[in-house]
Length: 159
Length: 159
DNA sequence: TTGAGTATGTGATAGTATAACGTACCGCAT
DNA sequence: ATGCGGTACGTTATACTATCACATACTCAA
Ligand SMILES: [Zn+2]
Ligand SMILES: [Zn+2]
Ligand SMILES: [Zn+2]
Ligand SMILES: [Zn+2]
Image (cartoon, rainbow over all chains, first blue to last red; front, side):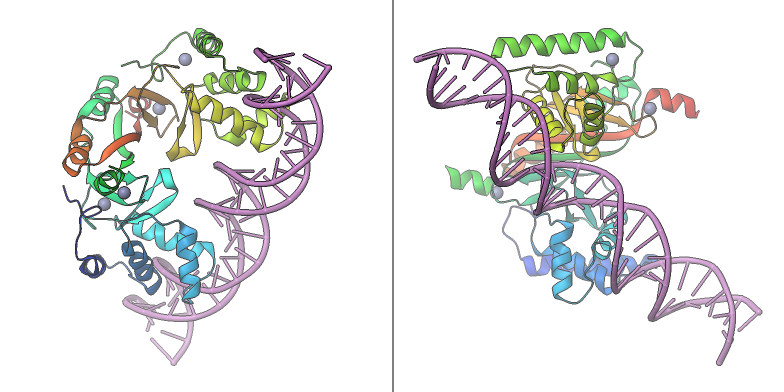
C-alpha cells in the first residue's frame, strides 16, 4: 500500500500530479473541471488531512470564488461523485483521493494526534465483515471504513 | 454471527432482555440507569434500525421526559460511552448494541431498502486494512466500519 | 445535615447540509 | 442569428445535527 499520508514525499508534485490526473480524466469523460472545482481539489490536496466544507468555503470566499455553502458542497459533491475525493464520515469532512479515477473501495487511517489521513485499499469480500455478510446473505454495495489511532510518526514522537 | 437484525425473532423478548441486561450491568458498576436513559434505550431497541437524536427527542417530548436537545444527547452519550449503544456515523444516528456490556469492536450492515441495521463483530488485525496498518506502523485504536447494501429479505423481495 | 458529585431543565448558539429559485454560460439545432 | 436544453453558479433561506453555559435538583456518603 502507499504510505503517502505518513511518509515523507515531494508534496508539491503530489498536488500538481493530482490536479493534472483529474484534469485529464475530466477531459476524457467530458466532465467540466471548472475553476471552483479545481480550486477545491487543490485545497483538499494541500495537506493529507480532511477539511470541513466550511473551511473550504472560507478559502473560496477569501479568493472571491463563491461565498455560500452550496458553492462548496456542489464542488465537493462533484469530486466525491467521480471518485476524486472522499468524505470521511467520522469527521464530517473531505479529503482528496489518493488514486483518483480508479474504481476502488477506500479505507482510511486517521491519526488522532496529527490529523493526517492515509487512504488504503479495501477488499470487502475478505475478513470477518465479508464473512458475516456472506453468511447472512447481505449484499455489500459500499462500505465506510475509517480506523482511528496513532500514525508511526506520532507514535515515535510519543515514545 | 447473530442475524438478529434480519432474522425473524421474538422481538418483545429482545427488548426486555436488552433493558434487563443493561439494568444489571449498571447496578454492578454503580452507574445510574435513570428514567431518561432507560427510555432512550427502549426507544433504540424498538426496531433494529438507527434513530436520529431528534427522533428520540420528539418521543421524549411527547412523554414529558425532556424537550431540549441536550437531554437526548446526554442520554445517548451515556449509552454509547458504556457500550450499550453505538453511533452510526454514516447516518448521524444511533442504535442499541446487540451485545451490551461486552468489550467489542462493532461493524454494521445497513440495508438501504428497509433501513434495518445488523451488528457484526470485527477483528481489526485481519484483512487488508489490518495488513496496511501493520505495514505502515499505524496503531488502530478504534474503527468505524459501516457496510451499506441489501439485506436478504429486501434482496429476495426485489427478485 | 451538609457537601461533593452527578443528572436534569432550559435557552442560546455553533456546526453541517440542503431546498428553492434565479441567472449565466455553452454547445447545438433550427 | 435565434432559440433551446443542459449544466454550473449566485443567493437567500431553512433544515438538520450537536454543544455550551448556567441554573436547579437529586443521590449518596461522611
Ligand atoms: Zn480514493
Ligand atoms: Zn500522527
Ligand atoms: Zn429484536
Ligand atoms: Zn432490507
